[in-house]
Amino acid sequence: MLGGGGGRRFGGPTHKLLAATSSGSVIERALAPLSELVGAVFAEVIVVAGAQDLSAVTPRWCRVVHNADWERGLATSLRVGIDLASDGGHEAVVVGLCDMIGVPALTWQQVAQADSDLAIASYPDGRSAPPVRLGASVWGELPTDGDYGARLLIDRFPSRALRVSVSGSADDIDTLADLQEW
Image (cartoon, rainbow, N blue to C red):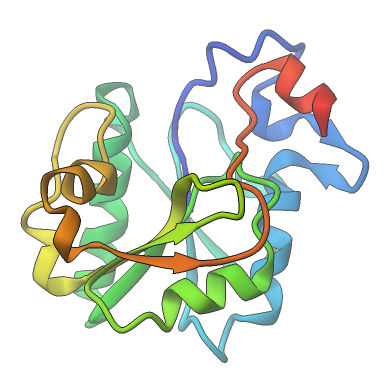
């Protein structure tokens, strides 16, 4: 889960990931569906933090790591996670964003179990958004700098990207107005 950004557009009294929802902070709500998948679908859940220390609001079953280069963009947080997965001997990762609170456990599972090294959730409203499954064969093709992630590969190689029909919402929390809509 990527949560390294500064959340500058949010405009609330706190960092957007720490903002309260009806059932915990934004990050707690985004991580909650993963609790039932740890050990069964995912070997581990890694939260890549950067601008904000997220360790106090991250469940014990998550591993929190810090991206010191977070200001250089999302790609640097993605790279931190990919490097940990590679060092851990994993063959694939499933990447999500800590500000997407409408992604249910089944969506995570469906993307994780997709038979492709490049798979992305396709939501009922027609949008494609995280989570994204990235097999080791594509890790070297990912950007290393800037606010680009797997979307760059999906746009560059659309025929390689498997779109997995899922439920839930592709909405993310970028502004206080976004949060108020939830």
